[in-house]
Image 1: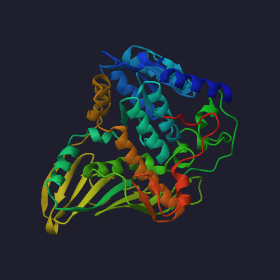
Image 2: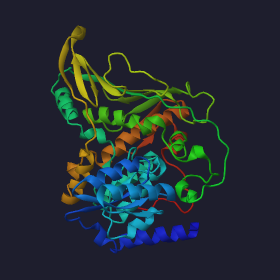
Image 3: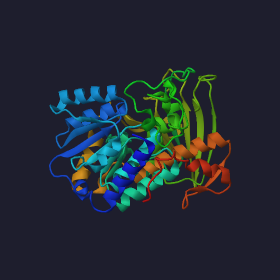
Image 4: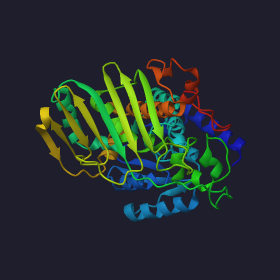
Length: 428
């Protein structure tokens, strides 16, 4: 499809939704929610979950790589007995009345554009984390969801683990006194990204559509499956990739919105000299009125941390003790390390977060979502602000009302991006 054809198709799809031709798709599903899954990386797991839930079925798999799309269609057929259709261009899904919701597991730079266009077309959305590639398009996704009354769930699926709400209740009740500092920790063992030469686009891959709103560049394996996470044009580094889970939990616990200021120290230590554009070590500090929120990232770490039950967790520091929380439980410690309440049970993703989305699609209760798009926007925003502070090397003051920096106009350019011709964001 040429760029002109792409633009014409997109304009037609959005116009159809706006003029009421998408009314059938916008109607609340009855017994079964028809889901189209976009992307065959993380999307393969989402497709399996939605195929197994009683109230949903996977009717389409969308991927720009024919081999991956066809393979996942066969796998879902084995699970559900129904073979989804493989679709290359997600915009074909926007005009289909048999698609109620899109599950978006594309690279990060497509998350918000797909979400926004899906809302305009009357579709509900499950969008993987982070909710956006930049702050401005994240806010536009929230506006689109609200204006078109769409159910949009963010992929921070740890919110489905039941012990978190118990832990947050204890914090609110003062189990460690007044909380004045939070630390989110993200430890991984990420491999190096070798420098690779550009090469021809593989057969069966729509690489132009894969790049989408990002600048047009030659095909390179580092810009494709998996490697894109570590390049600024497409990904958000491990802060937005996996760290967003811990960022989301600390923010959720204390109902934090936008910070007053952000600063960051970061470096490529284990990745020195390779093709990563993002850092493997970061310390981000978000400043709130009477609270500091700190994020620590070590992507060269092959070991568990002393005293931690999980490599990735959150620590809440109060004036009467501290609480350590991870996906498997929580522990409270008081003065001189005296133990307080604790809980530990291995948590596995049983599909509760995805069932929550399907339930809300059917009952249209946005307020019952585990992670509404506004929550996703704030958690993704903190990640974007941390990355911008790293890239500028400055402490940046932030206005929550306008979602802009007040002490560095140049940094505001990194709050959005220039969208490639033919892939511009629609007006909401």
